[in-house]
Image 1 (tube, rainbow, N blue to C red):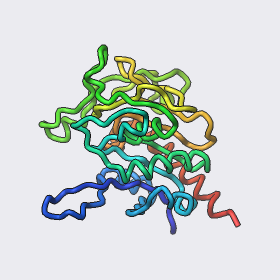
Image 2 (cartoon, rainbow, N blue to C red):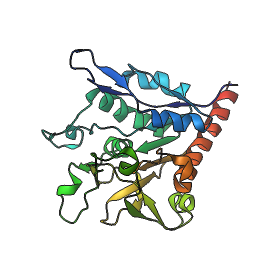
Image 3 (cartoon, rainbow, N blue to C red):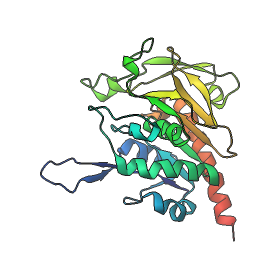
Length: 253
């Protein structure tokens, strides 16, 4: 039986210095989370902005994954730092894809870089180095430690009472992991901040102009999500929205 299709935009990396062609990559934990929710992850490896209008009607959800790369600062009026790892092909796709998915009512979930893509696509800006901003925490992971340590709960987030985040957490606070160097500076148009780190950094948003699921988070709920109720309920809400879209799409003439 066919499953709802979830589009996961790929990253573009040079993983082999002897191969100038580069690689199209996706961290398997995102695809595994989608698969475990009885959804079908799909890639359109060479899709660009001009392909969005043709491909988006084929899917039932979009999951914007995290990535080692940063959204290039030129997209929000800044200049890239010398230390930035950039992915211009992904930027070109996701800037268009975010706006198209929201306009079409396709469920959209942004994780880490995906949250930042949502924000920038809607006219927002980013702190390029949160840890260098006065009054802010260092939100980066200890990258010399095992993955279990890197993805361990790092700090609390404050959740707006009555928000979907508070419902998924079953409380107005929750513990989350933290693996990012950049973060939201100015919110994009239509985004509502509903989760905050202890230093006030916006870490969870809702798009207020969509009737479909449209949320972004700065943490990584895909990491062993089934063993963390807050993460599991968030992903299940996204999955349910994809199932609703799938049923509607199949019933359309």
